[in-house]
Length: 280
Image (cartoon, rainbow, N blue to C red; front, top):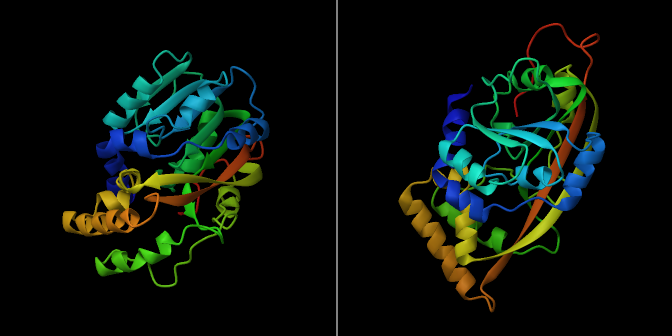
């Protein structure tokens, strides 16, 4: 696995409490489409890759599925266990997806990842999902990213000069995607040769934050966690100052998610060996 990816994905464990408080959940409509597209029945056996604190685990557990959640971070795994205490048929296991092995003879109706698939080693992730799924099972993944509708809050464009000032600006040529414009990964899924019938759905929703709530959110992003303290102080101070000038002291952040659902190719017509291709 790429060393930088490994280092950054481990940073979330240090912010487990803030992550639980600040990161949003996902819209009910996403889970409705997920259940329909993956043909999930009551009692279906699911394997979650990188469950974090349980943001996607909880709503799926409430729908009556059996879930094993994998999480590499000890603090994140413990908080997920606390959040899911008393919920039947859910097990949280501290392990990386790449190296984890299920009980003998166990396969899954769906392997899924919520805002975590991009952290899994791209050389093995599709092969591992294929191996863990039953024939006809499904792989599903989605993320939560910032999108910028035409009538969105201008705050984010206005604050960019502060990021530039502290040396954390966007790469040249970066664009602010609108809802429905987030990248899709159909080509990568199909290039693996292990999955067919890929279906993609876009979702978007809005969350309002005050200054401290928005700063808590930023402190769950790997890039902000890794910033030098003086950079965070400058950035967060400017966020507080600017929002204090607003009548309600709040900003509106628009979230977008791209749900990918693909069916496992049968072993009879799937590749006999080899790894998946295509890094994000």
